[in-house]
Length: 444
Ligand code: NDP
Ligand code: 2IT
Image (cartoon, rainbow, N blue to C red; front, side, top):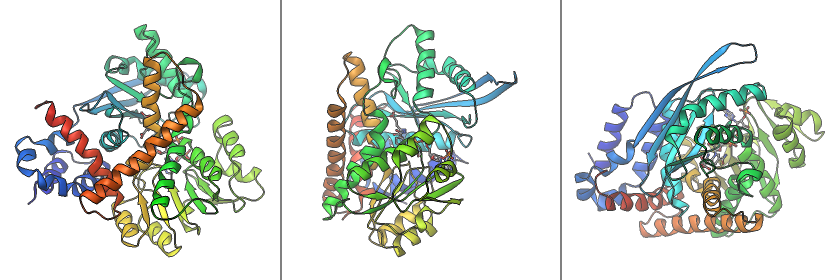
């Protein structure tokens, strides 16, 4: 058995019941096998792959809070501090009823390599809770966030671990979390990113993941002689990533014809109305069915179905494993050119392989959606120097970071003869830097 296979087997057995973590472990470790084989003796002796797959620290805590009826509710909070080889732990917080330790570990593991690809000094971490913000009042969300921070504050800090948003955690939640951190510690520091613009947030952080996704996809299309001009794009999700992906795709001359949430999806052949989408989702906190009700050109369908629509580029921006083998078959039979992942691990391993085998350009999440965390790192820089940069300055840096990520992937693909397997290229490039940093710091 190869060293990679041995470690996948061992880590999987040691961490039962964590299918999402096993999935990313398989994807990453199988695709870096070519690098590992070339350094097998040293890596084996140093147990490098075992150390990398074991979080440096994982924290699990009780989060009690009182709902609007006076009833005490109890949720579980998590923070996984996965790897600090290249910088303080960095990664979002997810509030969603599905959250468990395996999901947080999958997201934290992905974050290590994503953060490495940004070229910025940030390690990998992730956290969250099984709290469901949907349908909760503002006061309930604040009560939950304050209780969550009452425990989390002792584990984080601007030079230790810097959380941010993810599913269910946006500007409102980051604001409540930051307020409570400051109250508990008396520190006005860049301990969270995605903050409001009046208290240390960075311009363009809200837009960063979606915009970055398009800057990355633009590079990927360009390398293959294509552009977004005149293309039709399908997007899933209707949250932070989806909204700003749609906005940037339209700015680049494409027409985006779909968006979705967990109850249904919209087909809007005239192109999604971004102003209406923002009003519905960000201001009024309503559903895609409400978008369809207010937009005469839009059809609403219950359930899942975005990938049945014919288009050129697919941008899944909702959640993990939302593109399965049947969706991949639709994408291929509808003659798509490319799929670029806005969500984390939205494509199953089987679907990814099928898309790549059928010549669909495939932009992997840890590269394609790295713009969010990259601008988070720029927010940390601005907080440290007590300055705020302009929108253009941040947006230009973001565009350059995304170009550079694509270049690193191409270089790794060339160096290890991976063709245009950008999944392998991203994993290899992300891994090499972290591996070298870990080797340089001894057995810790
Ligand atoms: P939001 O909470 O803003 O939006 C999430 C969207 O995905 C909503 O439309 C939501 O629908 C939908 N969704 C969530 N869970 C499911 C599910 N189980 N099935 C179907 N639809 C679902 O989150 P973000 O936009 O921030 O995050 C979206 C994805 O992007 C996630 O994978 C996240 O990890 C990833 N990401 C986010 C970054 C960021 O900066 N925010 C950075 C990089 C990656 P509903 O409202 O019905 O739940
Ligand atoms: O998955 C991700 O990269 C994020 N949710 C953003 C993390 C961050 O620290 O901005």
